[in-house]
Every structure is written in structure tokens, then in C-alpha cells.
Length: 183
Image 1 (cartoon, one colour):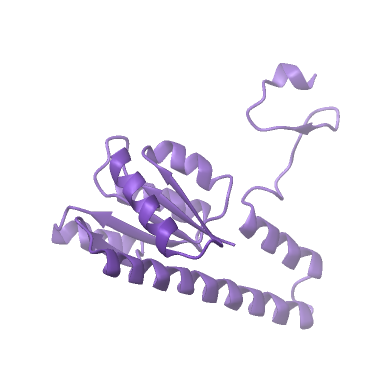
Image 2 (cartoon, rainbow, N blue to C red):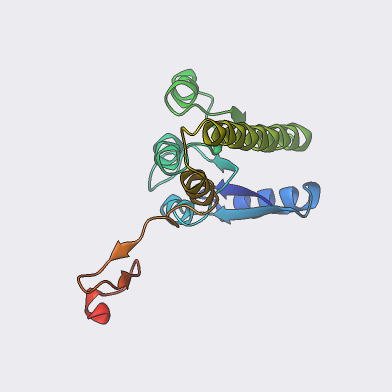
């Protein structure tokens, strides 16, 4: 299953994009949308996404700031910006600093947008295959243990799954729960 994340501070834009992608993409592609980049970042910390499409101008943070944080959490996600802004400096920053795959403008042309999303999903799929091939080779050469290769695979699939916080008495601490509950 592939995953696409859409982020735009205008809920109507998010809904329109979700409707379009759900209608045009195979059912195996899950599409999630957020109108708040902070909530989207929290979701990026929970689930792995293949493609992330962000607006540029948002009140909490701009799309470049958002995608920088996304890159830190999920470096292999294919990043794109969909924005009404066509300022050359913004576009250059997005390409050079955030390594966006495509910079698309609003209003979007349906066929162009779908073509770019399809290309981004294909790029993500190829990247995953390449990383798996490299890990398989490293395991065969005894430069990586099978255990560590599996940890990498799991971590890419579900960010944070291999990181466990332990309490003072050996208990597993659950993120977000009050420490008093674990005693």
C-alpha cells in the first residue's frame, strides 16, 4: 500500500485534492489530508508516507519549513509543493534546500497534477526497491545483520516503531501518557 499526504491551510483545497486523488488513483493508495501543518507533522511521526504535497503559504509555518521537518522525519518521502506563489526565490529555495520533486502551481490542471503524483509514487517505489537491494547486498556481504536490515525496514514502514522508551522499573513508557500513570 502506498500513502499520500496532502497539507493545505484551506480545507476546501484539501477536500478537492482528496476527492481527485481518490477518484484517479488505485484503491491501494491511501490519501490523507490536513489543513494544519502541525497536525500533519504529528501524523508524519506516526505513519510512513511515500509522497507528501504541501501548500507554501500557511499561517503556522510555510511549506518549506514544513517539508524541512518532514525530511528530517522521513527522508525518503517524495516531497512536492502545490502553491499559488510563483516567486522565483521561493521556488529555488524549495528545490535547493528541501529537494522538492515538483513545484506545482494553483490552480492546478487535473491531468498535470495526476501525472506528477503518479511519477512521485513511482519514484518512491523505486527508491524503496533500491534501499532494499542495498540492504540485501550488505546482509550477503556480512556488512549488515539481518536483524538490523529488518529494523530499517520496519522503521521506514512505521516511523518510531523500533524506538522504545523504558521506565525506571523496566516498563515500556507510552508516548503522550502522564508519567504518574506508569508508576
